[in-house]
Image 1 (cartoon, rainbow, N blue to C red):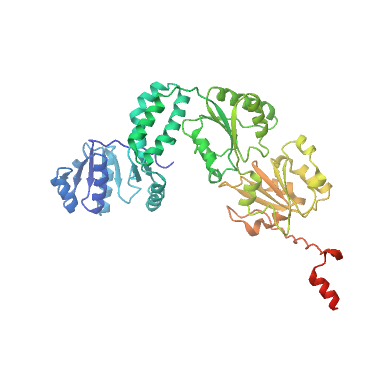
Image 2 (image 1 turned 45 degrees about the vertical axis):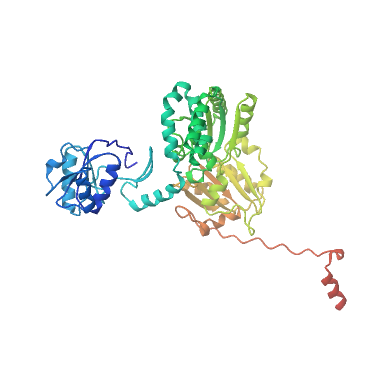
Length: 495
């Protein structure tokens, strides 16, 4: 994070603006809206600034800039067209440890003025760290359409009731549940309809209602493969409502950043050889926090029900009377294949897909290798990096062709994604050559030959393209005479 975001209370605090042109005029308007005590230093002022001076709303220091102007200021804004003067103002302010903003010069600025969405008392500020101001303005325009103007009155109503709500609900979990209903339920709807009196009455009624006990629950949430853009809207909502988040080791930091800031985050990642003990601990943590009235999110990479032990966890919750729901995620096979440009099915190459896990000897011993070795199908092998030699040996032994293409997708959908390609004959060798590490998904089948042609995300695949002939079209089967068409019968009679 290049800049530390903060909101400054400038009410009745001195702010100096150096410059008297149109740019300075815009800066002064924003500062006055924040109730700052503004002094403008410049030889000449725009008519609008002169009007503000006459009305006593701002002070004016006429003449050429002097270092003493900075004394006692909380903030300084350099808004002149003279770059050398702006640099001088910035240097002197910095020496006095006063935050300074130089218009259109991010390097000289110690604070930046963001694009603002004003729903007072709610303020949304957007910054591009001075790198792309127009992008910040574009984002502001988009968010303006999404954030209803009733948000301000809703925040003001919550502020008026805040002390009473804290007295009524000293328990944090209960207080959060009350706020959730207050801010998203009927009260918010009434304010959207511009009925503030009815909204206040509804809030008072809700506050006077009998206090319910906090009811805990668990939401199994699929985090997808790592790209936060692949989260569902329901998953994002669950992360922002969570009191406790139990997350897998491989859930990306970018996704965790989207969660509520004050939620307790507990990593419960499994390590090779210790899955059972860790799963018991996960069960115990879910039960403990749910029984304490917390909203628990069990955050899993990919999809909870695809090699994620989601079924086991739901069985445990059901047996212990804990309410639950499931938010599906995009499983690794779908995401890694899409981001590697590999269609899992293709009319010319594969008419079926098999999802397989190969993370340990016991799981691989139970697989039907004869069925997996059939041609014209796609295998998506999860957690198989450590067992590639076994996968290769078993498939070759059961008849899969050595020239069958593969694509190993490491860190699929993430910024550091890598795709390694080759044939089944050199699968382990290629993986070692390129030092493929977990998390990685193996896609094996004729469709993997398309990875070089269809690649669109990240770096080009490593390895040579593998050519594969499309399947021969099926030969037409002669129809029995009773299925002959009328036109066929007519042709026979004409012959």
